[in-house]
Amino acid sequence: MQVEHKRGRKQTTTTLWEAPFSFEAPPFCIEEKIDLEKVLRNRASEFPVLERMQNWMVERRQRQKEGSDIYYHHLPTKQKFRTRPEVINFLLHGTSCSKPVSRKKRKRKKMKRC
Image (cartoon, rainbow, N blue to C red; front, side, top):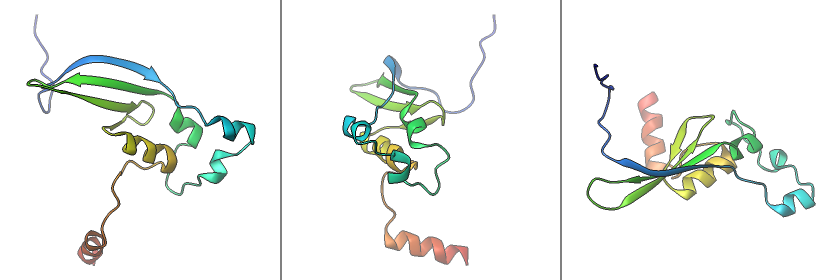
């Protein structure tokens, strides 16, 4: 029997556990009949807010030496997040970047385009 070799980087961690979950809108949004799509208008997002809340997987992976990491996977978009702020930013804004870009970096990008 031949073993298939995967391309790319060798995996150095092992999965301890994983569990599917979904987010829910806060109860006051439902009680007050607040339309999250209108409140959280997104320019660049492909997925509506309620779709972004569904179909998540949380995974805990053991490092080789010591410690472990938690990863959050949004299954429909196949995006992986390492921190809760990244997940919250994705839920609210539909983008995966967690840190705002500094003014210096924005200026450099504009200058490179010209």
